[in-house]
Length: 93
Figure (cartoon, rainbow, N blue to C red):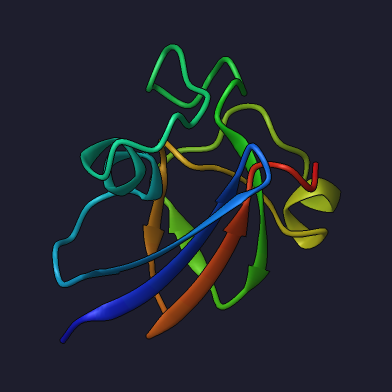
C-alpha cells in the first residue's frame, strides 16, 4: 500500500508517495531532496526533523530524549513511515 509523504526542507515542500520499507531520509535522498545527514547510524542528530502529522517508528535512537520524541522530533535516518500519510519538517526544529 502506497504511503503519502510531505517533506519540508529549506522552505520547499515535496509531496511524495512510496510503498517501499525505507527510512524518511532514504526517501528524501532518492528524490533528490537536499536533506541534512551525516552518520546515518542514529548518533549524530544531523538528520533531525519534526513529525508534523502522522507517525514514524525509529529503528534506533541513542540521542533523543523521551521528551524530544514526544514533541515530534525524530532522526530521519532511523525513521520508517508507520501511517498512511506523514508530514515531516526539517525546517521546524
